[in-house]
Length: 195
Image (cartoon, rainbow, N blue to C red):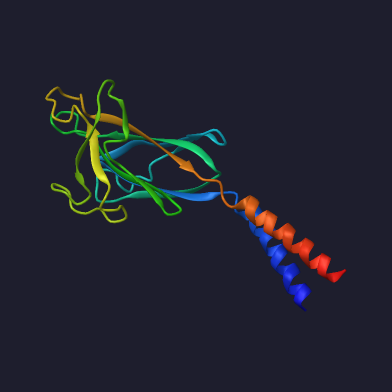
């Protein structure tokens, strides 16, 4: 009976090793006032994947869009395109509030995220989730910052209407090899004791 239990435990470890190849990564975001075109994720193992906005936050910054994707270990870059649909106003920038979570880690929107458009601008934090003039956006942590470009107080029409923000994460390798090794050791140990 003990040998059967050991063999089942070893097979379970081997089975877990086969399923632990990907880590679920959740991307949650909203824009002021929309995510213009969607979100891009690029990595060596996946190339570039484009996700269109679910449009639940279209002209409603209090609504979030969220999706989860399983990613293998590696380095990934994310791009968020934000658009403000009010082109006739100055001083009305396109803003982003977002977070990426995987395992126990979270990458929240902040000044460390890079601005790619407009060119030669920097990312500016306006305030944490819940800051005025916005109320708390449900589904995104209170640590996430509303961000936009350094031209957010420009008066030229359209200069701050569009913005693209970039960030990256590293997904660690799951404990696949350790589980595989435990499975092999368990099988070897149970067969050795049997002989």
